[in-house]
Length: 233
Image 1: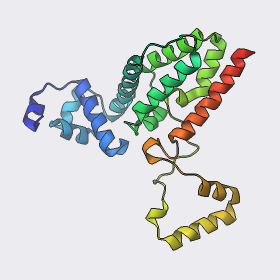
Image 2: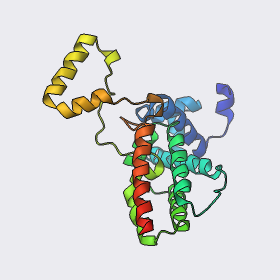
Image 3: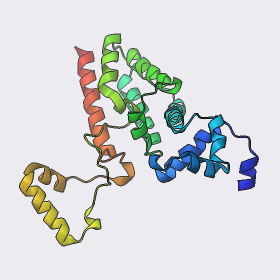
Image 4: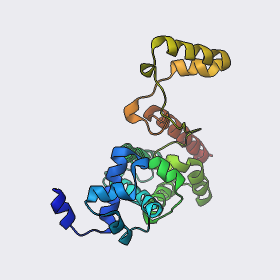
């Protein structure tokens, strides 16, 4: 679509949100400003204020936009072969949510920092709870499980910490400096240094600092195992 055609289309809240998603996908959350979104739409920044009250309103609304996309992806899944197979049904729902977040890697940080509970998010958790209920869990256990899962229910793990700068890899340093850093770390923190040398993360499946697919699925399966044992009591 040309810039002229873009200008002729009537502006509305959905178009502003869609443009903000494009900016975030390209530049991350820090790239979202009223000016950057307006530039993508081919309008003046002031025109956006008819549809969003400001940047915070826009960011809050993007949580709903992304979760609505997750809901659409979950709706497109084949009907479960056995509604009582809560583990399979819950696991595929969570991994479907994660696949959506991998297309919008900025979204976990936004979901974690903006506590808005809009209709799309409420619907996601309503269906999440219904899957557990179909599997035979009590309402109390479902309530506890939702708190235990936290953001993992939406497909991402909470970070122990969030470094301000991206992790530095050995490709960013000369070999001598990398070896010196590792030696210093090994002396101060021997176990963490040994673990760091052993571990690696697949960038294409990683959300945030170190939440890659294998790590996420490990944590997810540990939680599902625990719920399964509780159900069998």
